[in-house]
Amino acid sequence: MPSTPTQRPTSAPPATSPVPAARDPRKALFEANKLKKRLRRQVGEAIGDYELIAPGDRVMVCVSGGKDSFGLLDILLSLKDRAPFGFEVIAVNLDQKQPDFPADVLPRYLADRGIAHRIVEQDTYSVVKRVIPEGGTMCSLCSRLRRGALYRVATELRATKIALGHHRDDILATFFLNLFFGGKLKTMPPKLVSDDGRHVVIRPLAYVRERDLARYADLAQFPLIPCNLCGSQEHLQRKQVAAMLREWERTHPGRTESIYNALAKVVPSHLMDRALYDFAAVRATGHAEPDGDIGFDVDPDIEQAVDAEAAAVGTRVAFPAESD
Image (tube, rainbow, N blue to C red; front, side):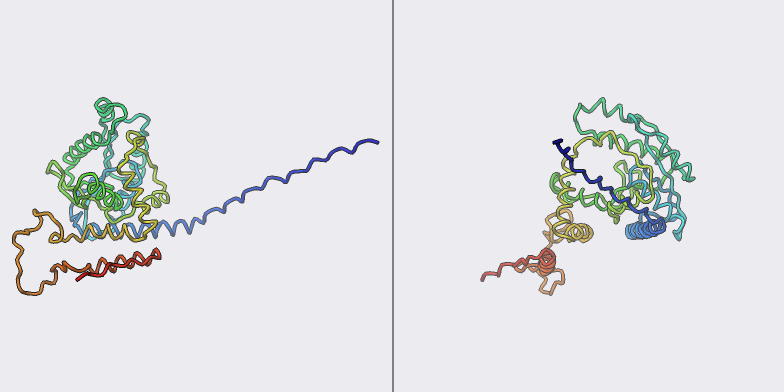
């Protein structure tokens, strides 16, 4: 009797992944315009609060090819067309002669859009590679050389302001880097005089979040250029601080916002810097002091803030009762 051939189970046809629906271009345009309006408002507020740009200023925008500097340039150009006073914007890029650097990208982008610009060619890469041993951190020397070149160009262009693309996340991270590793209460200010005393440096993105700049760069499709000179290095301290801040924001929403706001609410009389406050002159006046110290009580503002944070994570923090 002939054997019945064994029938192998037939496998089901592989499941096909659903093809994602094409993004509605009208919705994308709406989102881009909404985000740009918010960024313009935040930059405009920073300019107004710290008097970053004045009538007749010539603003030199340092454009590296990253998302932050592209966003800064785009927003300042947009504000320039809407500002109640006139000012100039000129983009400057420093070509440091890094290997594989796409030297044509920025000049083409700027020229195609009719943006006034200057491309500065200076081989700082070879200097850094020659001076810094293999595996060493290049950022300090690279920054110093780049800064000197940009200051020189600012003088040549008769720029009255040098605009950098540092955002609020940079400001917050730098505060903790100085606190943890430098022992100072210090960060990147929105406006300062350059170390050579000849230029005013401004940070118009001081109120802008990095995630908004990243999203805006994606929507605007800027031709981003990575920094290959230092991109492979660890930057361990800054990475640690950034990771800490992300974790805080995840577990305690609003904490980093509170810390950022505190940078603009300094109370010198309640710190310990004798250069900022004359502690030797402190005397009892016999009159009520609205800003006087409640030295034996929990600060009610702190108590309320801790209660609010605890409520957000479902925990009640109890302050110890005062002992007699």
